Image (cartoon, rainbow, N blue to C red; front, side, top):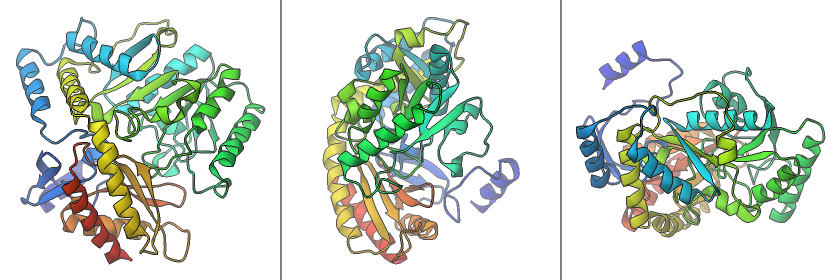
Length: 427
């Protein structure tokens, strides 16, 4: 392993983040477990950054990929592609967007990049609204709108970005307000902001902020925002790269917690739909999707082998009601972790929905981030056989918990017990 780490450092960028003091090489997985090169077994509570949505080595997906690879792997979008059309039909129907069109990409970054291109072209302006503490990818345009300086290495951007309050409920200038007043204050801030600028193209927002530490506003905030946006024709882009496909348990899409004013104009997705295969995409009303006046293709977006995986994975998800499982098992896991947190001075908050759970850590007796303890908990959990993630922004530090949606009650209890001991070792 040390040899592989040395080779990694020799040929890959210094800024390519690795977890753990002794980085882990994962060699194979099954169900909710993975194994490293030394044969150690881990319960996986991070799923390749929320990407292994159903299970590792899911037989239905493995079979679909193998069979498709035996026929043809790739042909590009210059040719008709049956698996791509079939998956697009299913996603269009599930999206809730009327007269929907679907464009496939290879990642969430590229999906958000495409959504920004569509919105700015349709609206004929390069100004966009984004949320503070947000993350939307690592392309030039998506980095430029990301509201988290830890993940935005340049201030250069093809877009002019204006940042809005509301993505973080328990921090910031409106944190002490009740939910109703919080939403009212954020809407007033948005109205004031729009009074100082030409009408932007769109608001892009994650219903639950992923890299930012699984933070979210009260239900209904983006519905209230949308009423204001619609007055000026401003579009709403829901970044569902991490929240889509039933992970939140209560809803299939994160935007549905804010759906009182209707669905978003544009929806982006990625991660879980491929269960590890590289799939991203954009759903938009036809008039928006068709607004481009020049040719475009996607060499690898929608390629047959990834579409076969997506179809098999989505079918498994729906047929086995993994959204319902996320609601039930995730609810138990959140309550278990909250009971632990109540006994530990360094845990500020346990938040989230379904199997998308954040545990925010602070230095005991303060409201300040504790990144050192977050790293220590990550290490301790790994030593005990549990893999989790971390995140946060603007003086916050949070543990990120997002297992495959097929997680069992017994596995949730096992993971919670390991995490409890890891937290107690840090505090």
